[in-house]
Image (cartoon, rainbow, N blue to C red; front, side, top):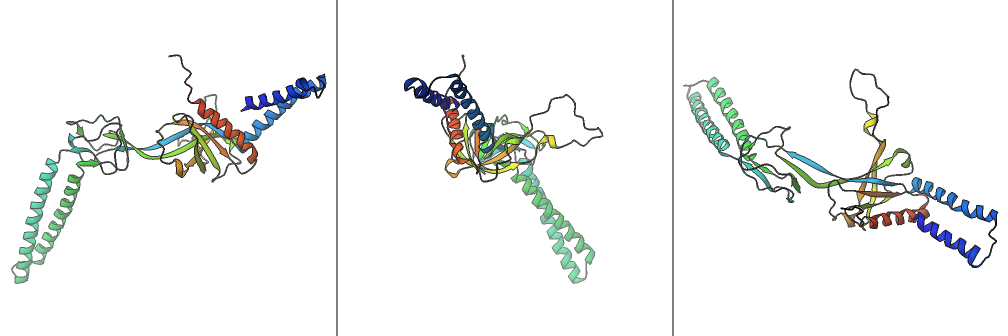
Length: 318
């Protein structure tokens, strides 16, 4: 955009001083002609960075669920395929249910026996041949087996692991014959949800004019030539550099490098663009248009669109 403005300015200078010779090409005029674009462009860029700040670090962040079975056992079926979208409730994999089915049958038999003894003890207590203590003992025993049966049935249900929401299992290495265990450190499958967040990272002094609700636009490298409309949801006024680890050490401010001090701006994508596929980890550029200095927003919009179309170019030699 700056090159376009300089080209327009150069054309005007040529028309005035050389084509129509409306003004003499003297030293004062030469200095004036040279100073105007320097001051003008500098002022324009400074105003743009305040009232229409841009970021070249926009990220699509998806939630990733580490799928861990609630029970252990040998895997007998894996319907899930890596990088194939699935719906909520679809079967990811199945664990051999045989030991859990046997456990349900065993506890069900014990529960039935406990209930039979409970009925008999109540009848004996009513006839005076039994005592209340036996009734209470068998009542407790029946209640315990009832709870064990409910837990055994729940464990049996957990042998079939379902997709928690719409999404895609990634890098599915689980195979039939594997042994699955309910350990958080050893997830069976990584499941990427369809739900995502858009986050743009800005330098700290770029955000003093930005407010929730401001208009924003995004150009992703995965979608050349496409401008996605959005609005500012919120500014995350926190980052890791604002937190001290719990330790007995005195905080140090030495020469070791620290990450750039940026704040994240959460963006809400417009309704008309919500059906677009945005890959997890996709990167791009964004611009936020604040309430002030609206006339210069058009320049930022042109810059963003030129950059979007330049994503069609792949400048590599191999």
